[in-house]
Length: 136
Image (cartoon, rainbow, N blue to C red; front, side, top):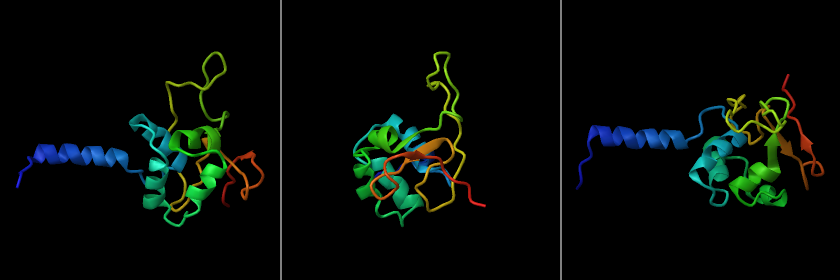
């Protein structure tokens, strides 16, 4: 049996920790961050769902209905940035160099934080982007 050094184990744990969604991070912010590691189906969406929102069982059926067949398409078609809260470049486009920190959501939801708008569709309200409502 191969023995690992403490340093090797600590390095492996650091990698695993970066791949896990922090508590209260929203699905859109998590997927946006994880796309640096590639897009392979709904891998990051389902990882988030399994760890933070296990009751969101219809996600894998609803996201493709909204055009989200893989993680990068989820950010292109299901979520989009809330222009009011993202910094803009001089030409008016969203700044690629700075990504704001997640505004956090309650545990158990796949709805995005205030930084994102979620597209409503088929059974989610007719295919329009809606801003998240604040719970009172």
